[in-house]
Length: 456
Image (tube, rainbow, N blue to C red):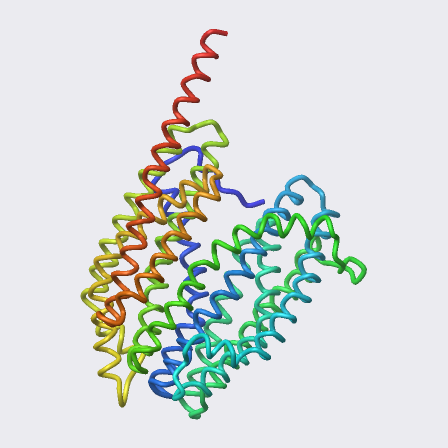
């Protein structure tokens, strides 16, 4: 397997070199929705931009829930491959694919059938109701292919191939943008075309992974009789994936609830919020990826018994997070108007851009908080305290939602910024004492162990 030994060498260089590929992969993942929003807003109008905004949080819940389950399965497959248990590896992959087919098809059916009640819960304005319904119906049809790509991608990563899924994702992201530009920008097709091009790209991603595995990775190539559900494997997969899926779904669930408050402010604000949340996603991604690098660094060094290096890695990681925040804030403050114009043009654009500018000006100063919350989350994942990370995420998301509904009626879109800040500050108020409590116990335990060794 392709491994990265982080127990020796320059700490900052290792953290940065590990983070960069993660950032690239996630940026291309985010590009799907961002390109749809930009092209829909510029060539169809503010209503289309708002409609894709309605669909965004719902899509994120689906994608993050699916990826959480697949990540859990990936842990098992990596373990089986590392131990040479190829038969178990194939049983796990077969279980993942078959059970996932049933789950994703059922999810598609439920999504298509209950689209109207969902739009009612989201308080979607009548002016964009039909557009949003059309977009989401097509998106739900693509759910099984999204699942297959994530499952096959994790299978490839489990045997040491992390570059191939990234290459396929990059290729299909570019294809998605090209199809959008041609059919919507050149031919003038509507919102359904935007959803269809995304679905076509998802189908192609899954198909490319499937073909590559059967041609180049025999260890993952399943015969028809191996495509079945193993109950033991299914239980283990759900056990590993449930916490990850739950934690990854908390934030987009919160966004769906926040969308309900935003929807009372009119189409211009809805469109602006859709645009700035896409910008937020791009802003947060490096912070989250630095956190993932810290997790791996800390886990490897603690596994090697090098706790002091692990704590040094945590501090260096927070420094990297801080440097990134300074650069991010400078870019957002200097280019917020230019960035907003990427999402909207034509009639009604000025109102949307003005709302987005206000949001981004305030948020530029607040990005420092998720830099630190993500960094500390990376530490707790590295030491195996997954429940602590889940509690922290739930604190932030729940308070963000509560204060959004309190502040938005009085402050408009800027109220969302302040609600986010309150959530992050309270999350840090939980994380920082938890970190020092853990560190005190950890170092005390090490002192006792060293004293025992000295006596022997």
